[in-house]
Length: 259
Length: 277
Image 1: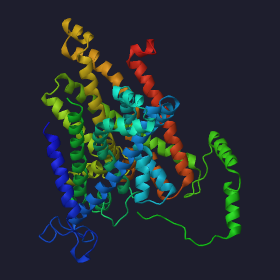
Image 2 (image 1 turned 90 degrees about the vertical axis):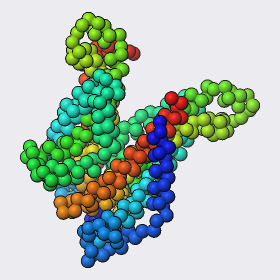
Image 3 (image 1 turned 45 degrees about the vertical axis):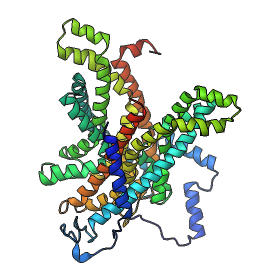
Image 4 (image 1 turned 120 degrees about the horizontal axis):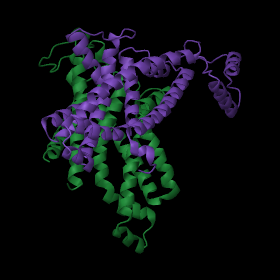
């Protein structure tokens, strides 16, 4: 498949631009509301006269940045749990895998509602809500990979050389399980991005005036009839970002599974 | 989002003690839990903090609304998704297969909070044929149900396609073809039926998608259902309401998984006769 390298290049290029370009996404200008696209504001302005392009790019930093942090957290927690349950087996595996079975079926939005009821809405609430259930798919995958690798000869060899279980799990099993886990992280990215934007859309996550795609959608919805681009642009940003990283993940999965 | 917050002033100790006694907060935690469990089992879900009225009737009416919305969405999803998946499986890699694959990727990738405003823009603003929000009129069911149906329809199409493609390669289908049965009959009686037993085993995925979808859809379209009730109780810090709503979610999840198993038994004779098939 040719798509994976292309997707990777696009992701890296866009990420570099987004991370570097300085833009003012929060200063308002009430004399210049709902402005049409112009050289000063390439995509026009929103209901408070803020530059829409700057907010979209700022939103990329916040939405994608938060998603990366959340996915990384889920991957680390889930991989640790999966390594533990896969390597320990027995009762530990039983408990971890039953817990995973339950958590993979719990929607993040519902967890987000509960977490927001106990704490104030905000970025921390968002990350907790994603982490509570988000580690479970990684734990399931890491468990299966660990069980598979545990039976291989190099593990037997390491045991014969006197390596302890933690050393074998981290130094020998983990590197061999890493590729499928990275590919899986790309596939989870879209899911987590949509959860984060969705919770922020509902007002339970990132708070205004921080530019975030879900927040922009929620704000734009009030002016949907007069200025539909305020809804359509952040919507397109979410869908495009989710799709590109998913394509990348599928490509990696296919390439690394050797088919 | 603004949240109603009580002023952070020092409360009057006497009033605080009276309210704590009224709510049973001065009792030990195990006793509080047993009291709560006892009253739930007798149908008393407590009073809403927001309206000071019993939670149970509000919950019942919200459940009724969500049941209607979700049923319409599921029927839409089945009517769209299952035939799409079956036809896609007839010729893997063909035009139908590609179109269905593309649509179903979109259906899964476009979340309700994006699909809802887009559908409103298309069907309530650009071509004003449907009301943009509200509940009570049959026309007001269409947009929320369509929004909610997108994810299950896409999921059903993907699963049905995969299962049907698998089933169509099996010996009994080859035999049915060899007997000279018409294509339609082979596809639906021998192929799709068996494929559907595989799809029903993913009921948990459908349920999770519908549940989180209904929160967003009911908030966006101002539908007074269970998702809206959960959302409002979080925003208004209405803990008895939230507790009751979550209890209802869990109860519905259990009923759904039992119903899915019953459906599977009805569709799949093998599951009826052997436990470890």
